[in-house]
Amino acid sequence: MRTKTRKLYKRTTFAAVATALLAIAVGVVSSACQGPVPDRPVPQMTTVNPPEVMVDYKTGEKTVRLRVLTYNVAALPPPIGFGREGALEQIGKYLASIQDSNIAPHIILLQEAFDPDAVAPLLKYSGYPNYVHGPKRKDRAPKLDPEYTQNFKRKQYIFTGEGWGKLNHSGLAVLSNLPIVEKYSRPFRYCAGWDCLANKGVLAVEVEIPGVPDNLLIANTHLNARKASKVPKGRSLFAHNLQVYELKYFAKTTWDRQMPLIFGGDFNIRNKEDRIQHALAVLGEDEPYMLPRYYCLDPRNNCDIQLDLEGERPWARTQDIQGFANGNRVSVEPVKIMAMFDGGVFGEELSDHDGYLVEYLLRWR
Image (spheres, rainbow, N blue to C red):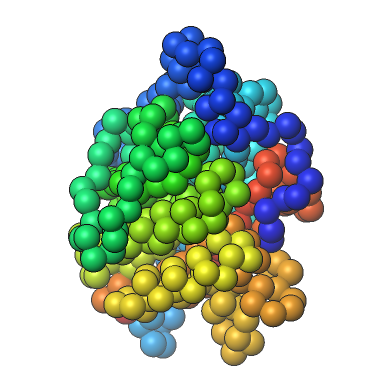
């Protein structure tokens, strides 16, 4: 699975609109500041097509198979992006058409779900009853310890969007066929370039899976871009590194280790060795996180691999990542990885990213 190099539509970046904002002013700003499609307070308790609990009566072990899709849908806010309603409607209709199949995701993590006019058809047609978004445009995050920030100046490149304020929310959303009983979100305090115009961060939900003894924590995120941020490489790397520390802090303050954890999103790390090494070192320092792509490279783990994992370090050749960690009672094991919306059997290309689906086996006694 890879980020597309062939664009399906003319995608402009935050740089394009920011330049326009300098000249056009209030009318364009108000358009870019649209809010997300409203969600409902949690808990949201509707259940549709829950995974079946299987019991091994010889050992007493119980299992469920849970599928999680992460997908950057490129629904950028107008006037940056436009004309995405049709594509997201097709995404929604395809998801609805597979609801009763063995590839239907139970939970979907969306990135770049900015434009409410584009996102609304996806929500309408997909049939997922539970939906939350965040962080919101006006949400704010506390400072990191100065040990990490090293006097990072938050308004250094004002001609590429820094210091303008947040024109949009995070673009993160979670859709679920399973009850969402709690929601947590935190924006990133640190950013670089045009990325600063969106209030990127992390969105997490506790999901209740019928029959499973503990809730599952699901986290969704979108980290700072490199080239699209239009600042020097070192600047965007510094911001990305700080966001990784913010993710670590979020996990420490939000994740009850009793619960199993699955996380995903657009990490903007494809073929960026400096970003990859820092993220692995920081996030893996205290917690035994694993990546399904890495886990499934070991033939002893018996994964059903429906992705191209040939070559060296294939798990580093994508922006879109999922990871997992066990809870105290419930363990998590990837058993299938596959692409969706990649132009193959499982959906046509409808964004500049593929969808990345992982099927997990949750075990407990």
